[in-house]
Amino acid sequence: MVYSMKKNSSGVRVRLRTLDDVVDAVLCLLGSNPTDSLVGVVLQDGIVNRAGRCDMAAVEQPGGAEWFAGRLLPGVLDLSKGPEQVVLIGYGDRPRARAAVKRAVARSLLPVVGALVVENGSWWRCDDGHGGPDTAVG
Image (cartoon, rainbow, N blue to C red; front, side):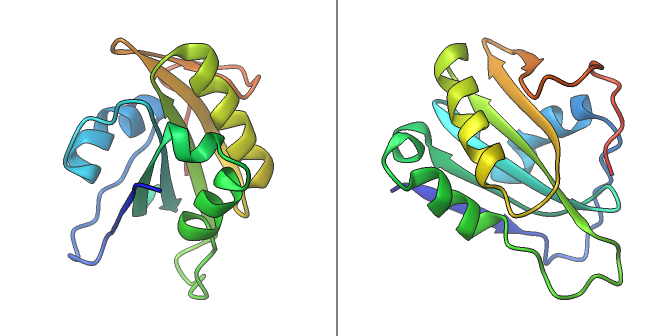
């Protein structure tokens, strides 16, 4: 399984206020534009704690969504900065990405504040929530 994760250990605080902010920040957080991937961005009080990416093919394997959730999504013990939340984003073919995000949402160990699909530079919510680019996170 191809997987990458970045923990915010630099001391730089990146505050993301909306789902649009989260989608825009993924390139900077991961260092590349994800394709055919599932991405999770973990926030504490709207500040990025860590982000990770997994190939869509790995998530589609039996146990793949659980593996991703176990690697990226376990909560930290230091809750002094507030509880953790996650935004899950599928990149690629919309039906395939939506299915992967739904699997990850069902297995998330953290509250999911956004479940999105990005295809050809546009994004859609797939968590049946209402709202759009200005939906608040954190």
